[in-house]
Length: 324
Image (cartoon, rainbow, N blue to C red):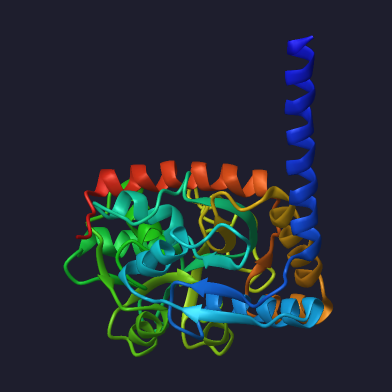
């Protein structure tokens, strides 16, 4: 009889907690929400975060404020979000640095597996290898040949040490057995300008800012890192087509919340964001940037994070890249 009473009491407590969680989700949000973007304004992560934030404000009647906390490759903002209350009122938007930094830095202020609940990978941009049109290469194979013949003469610009485009260039160097010098710049804009100005002959970065320069003939695209050719530049082959299997890479825009956020709130956020991304104006804006719409489920994004941390960790270790 005592066991029965205890079991009934335990079941009652579980039921009360479930009802409380459901009630919390139904009332959510009841005050302003903060979206932390761990980068400066105007970049792809920031643009998508602001699109989503605006639509959330319109749908829920609560102000959604974007808080840019740039620095240390995104670690500062991600650390702030990791220590925020797990109540659904702090949302984190990240790029692929979220998966790269655990291997790149000796110490980071978050655990990629334990500090957050992944909500969704919302969008992703392929990378493109490109060159100034004055350079004597029209294919990736020709780029490899000229670098092998005179490695001191050629270098490749990237948006910064440890960015996924930088690691894509490193991976090419490893697999093609190239003595490839990479020149890290403080962001995609400066690295693109360096190639457009022919200060650096080659570049690799996420395709959105490069697209208009490809279309205008100011740079020449050689290869993309997507699994399939992109409709943005359908004539440009993939790395796999060129014999480089396993070189698929992209810069993502992902959404997470602090660990411990109630499941009902996570589900509500995911459903609402999926609806927002599917809106014609939002979808058009993102695709115009050169990004592909993804909107993965929380389990799918969780699995992707695990795979990407391991994958880029191997490249970083093989190339002996470290950032203090």
